[in-house]
Amino acid sequence: LLQKLRSQSGAPIKDCKKALEASDGDMEGALEWMKKQGSLLRNKRSDQEASQGLVGVAFSGKDTGAIVELSTETDSVARLEMIHDLVNGMLQSILQSPQPGDAPEIWELSSEAI
Image (cartoon, rainbow, N blue to C red):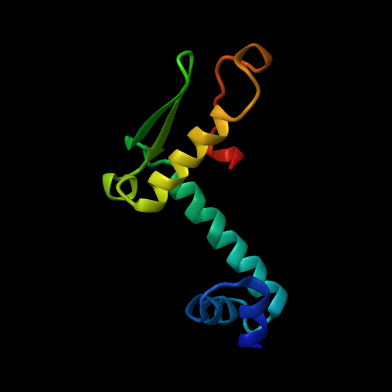
């Protein structure tokens, strides 16, 4: 039962054990318990301010450029190589998008859209 819950949820074994204990061994109850715990964690984290981050700037030619700001909760996350790669990838994607007259001047993507 534990292995089945783990394969369905993708959660760590420790969390699966807690869920099964909380639901008295009921698989559906365990999945429901895990969903509730996940939503509680999301709500708790949504209160935290993303006051750190990274700004990337790139140019293509004389008259085309892009600026990307990526906000994070901590400066240690902003220093990660994969975050720098993400910002650079976003910059390149923007520069390769339609010409300025064909696209909105400002694009904003919130974390909910990701």
